[in-house]
Image (cartoon, rainbow, N blue to C red; front, side):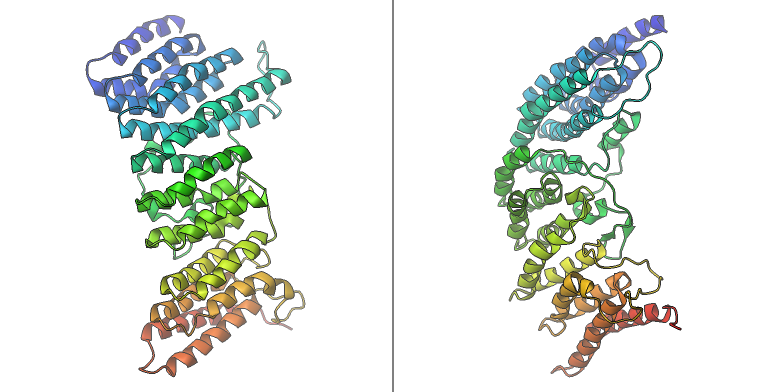
Length: 488
């Protein structure tokens, strides 16, 4: 095997110096696999090869080499039994990353932002893994001591604080909007990691965004990242509670806040949208109420944006501040929703601007659909509507405290002067009906029947779309009630 490796290495080196850029690009894309194939004896040679590709004259090659850095580092760290080699690969590549942040190509800088986010979560994950109990070692292999593990973690934290965070901060201030957007989403995606990063080959696959289907994030609801069950409005109800890890420390979050605040006033609407998308991830990195309040101000500012997509994203992120992404899977008893979201929900419902009143209904849908009212018993479509503990349909005091408040805000819009707002009341109630308790179902049906009565008496005649959605929601409630088991 050693002789075969000796024959293959010159071939790889020659391909890395090929005159055709696409050949060099292919070598850059496969550097991590080459590292695994040749083994740790040749790590230093492959590191030199990747460094040369990072300085290539073709921007496509440089961009591909930058994207390969996280996978390459992961290959070296997982394939090496010596801690000094782990440090060597970081000491060799991270200075290159600092130099590339001034690259003339926006494509290369965007790739660097993506790679920095992936390296961020990789190093944080490896730091967490060093504190865990290691699996049994193979015969003849010596495992790292606890002191070595602590020292390694310190080195990783040093690289995060002194290299990766400054790179992301500079990329957030880049004049090219695509670079800024890539930087924001790099931090967001890093903080969305659903489990601590383990030393496995599956990580390298998860760190390769270009192998995934090309989907415009602007068309995807933020809440879709939290669960797999999709409701008709592309919002998601979370049947399971994944565990999220905080990637950024409290101080690192505070360092990013001024930059994000300035981005919220950018003339580019996609930059403003990306700036607010990061809010749930940042909330997940801190438990201090003061810091969380400051972060939420990003949402409140952009909820009045002139672009519909930005307003919707800001409202959604504000609501999801009480979700598992922002709380590492912990239950806060609905404190975020009751203390932060509901007051702003009422303010939007009382606004003279019809867009803000429409935003109220979207927020209600997000809150109920994502289970952000903890007292609400979650049901599945087609299941019986639950009763309270006494076996009757009388409202329970717990359910009224939060879910009823949210529903009451939506109900206040049943007689809105704008028909589009009125019809969306019925649409939203119909989409969340199966998630409500029996007492709340009765409450909603009562409000919808009142809306039908008010609509029929409206001057100029009733709006047929308002009637349609209200009637459809009532039919959905009646279907649930018919499936309810009889009480003996």
